[in-house]
Image (cartoon, rainbow over all chains, first blue to last red; front, side):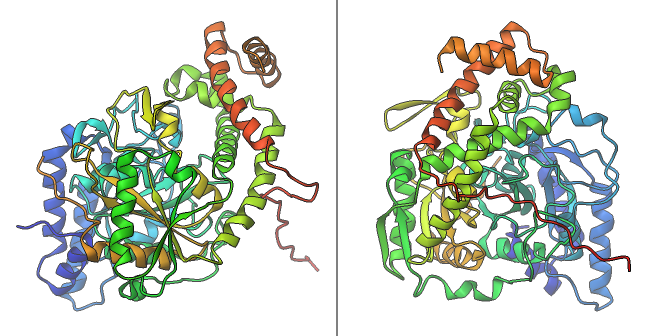
Length: 467
Length: 67
């Protein structure tokens, strides 16, 4: 049976070409056949999923209306609450917490749309990392090269989609944790506007910057999932959405008439030649439809990255102060010293970073008076080998793990929505590098339209992998 | 901040916030803090006025009078 993408799966089930049960069993077989090499999952719930899929098929048999994601198998980063399960957030420390009493809001919304939850996914401990080198649960491996990282912190979410285990996953992104795994694994990802989607029922990392969002194996499917995830949530103090703003209906407008630019300056200086080639491929493809100007300057990118780093360290460290005091040895060895350093940072650094952020927000919004979508690499390079300590970017020797987020951190600190598109430049040994399609706050529709145009051109695509 | 000053800072503040650290941890944490100090210096170069308020502001919850 040929593999179907997310949007093809929706159509096949809706038309009766395939049953939800058939689709689910194919996913379970794929997970069982590949998981020993990928290590994307930390938990599965196949029996519950079979019951959910059977409900979808029964509804269809009765002629009832199906949800927009009816029968689509999905899995979630293990910082999302699943009722009856302990929310690990990649940690050993959280194992002593009580099981969640409810599903996270976004899990509920996907299930209300008919999607079928099959399990939870590996991540960097407490989302503090870009490589999913998790000492407690093992590293998640890149399906395109098992020696390489899948990216992080939502590494399981990226690898599960790239490996064809499930067509849809959820993850979180504070400094790049959706965009980095999307880039390294060659799949589609959406980091929505800060405050767009409810975070209720997810384990926090940095309250001031945490975003949640979907990964998918095709662009129309990504938009379908995003639309199903939307909705105000007055019980989440970090959710600022007031209305549903569906995007699927406008995808086919593409980029005709949009003002598009490629970010230069910092975003070129911190990118390897392969990452710059990925951007050039995207810009050339979009240039067939609309003018794409090179060398657009993003305001204060280096300072924004510094401020994001400082806010992350302070809030992340403070959040875990109790366990750092009493059981630091149970924390992830790769990040515990960074967490402690953050907990000790002077307040002056943190407050200045937050004061800078408001000024920065206004500067970025001013930039978007002249542009609809801006393009930049998602990562400075393709996936490094697991265990790498150093990377080289344009002759600079930089520490590997923090440097992977150099190009994502300034963007998420502004709150702008970003679609990450999978590009395939040369010189990477066959590995992908993602491209960020960045729009003004609350304009996910424009970033998705640009993604749709790239997918139509064929230059951005998810490649099927034999494992 | 010199390496010695960073080590002294880590030792002192760890006591203030009640984080028990051994000498090896102090040394490792100081390396991270020193790196962040460089980033904080980058941020100091950005001019801010007294009217540049923080991005995150406390928001009072709506209050329904009991009367």
